[in-house]
Image (cartoon, rainbow, N blue to C red; front, top):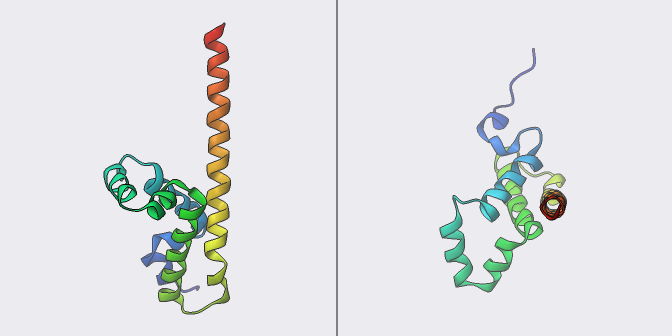
Length: 116
């Protein structure tokens, strides 16, 4: 019988698809209503933080760095740890761009329907 990997149970962000859960973290930090007040406060204090919180790719990278740190604490050193921030950054950028494209398409067709 296979032994259960307890580190996977302890840390939900390191499930089988960490990029998906981290895109959720990226969305919650960057766009959600829950963090609107703290996000606006932090944006007013620093231009670097303002840019970080408005860029899905940048925020994805730093969220990936956080995941690399968690992976290091639970599993130890691995060369994969160097690639996680870049993979999460690319994943967040891709899905943010995809969602923007879907939203623009929806607005375009909504405007066409309203004109007719």
